[in-house]
Length: 371
Image (cartoon, rainbow, N blue to C red; front, side, top):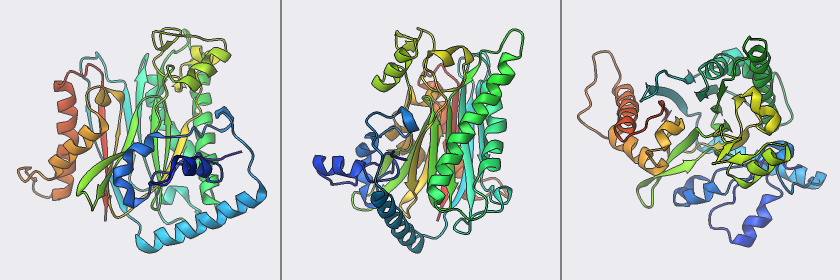
């Protein structure tokens, strides 16, 4: 069975794309030279284990070939780019909502907490945005507990494959966190009905693992030296009940989709919490993608749908770039200029989303990639 659905290499023919899907391990983003191939990043194959359609078990020979190719790729990437620093910044706006139901986590470095690490790993970072609905309890619970569960389950000591082990760790972490919350929610009187999206970026050295439930999104800004433009590469796959595979799963479980929502109410088809919809095919199995950072990468944007209702990914990336290049941003004494610029970019983008009429909560997180 395929562990990860790979994205095709840029410039491949349609036949070549099909041929590549089988033997590759991950739902990967294009390499550094493909900033103009951002559109290909939307050809994402679900990596939700047994929920994918038409998956076939790979032969042992293919598995071994994958392992060799992975090792070569890793050596090449590690040799050309040192471990890139990551630093997160965030801005939140309540919008027109009565309360703030979003939550977020910025952990620039959790290497010590994850010890003992496999010898191949030098640095671990974690960034996440949770967009709550029906209350704030599910998003807050996920923000407090998901990374704690991840640290406990993170590979300890030597492992045969870091990539496979991290993927299993993320799947187990999401399952465990959802089960913990549902147990707590069902024990209340009346039972809590809160739910939350989850978009988490786990950085293991220069490899990003993006685990996503629901309609919050992660975007990578990658600079193209040829066109001298910044591309917005999608790192996550949205889950809503209007998508064919999501709708089929919901209907198979006995639920239905009305007005683009599960039972006419819930806008997402995967989430943490939402106990009353779990029997209707709403699941907490994330899509997981992998992306190798390069020297052309500038920042990662993680935001809830409150931003993307009024900004396209390309608009948001270009807005941030223009803020970072703004010479008029004032730097307070004792603060680094880069910090001031990224903080201003987050705040300006969140403000602009509200000005454009986003009635929802807005959370904008920008993770700076330090070269």
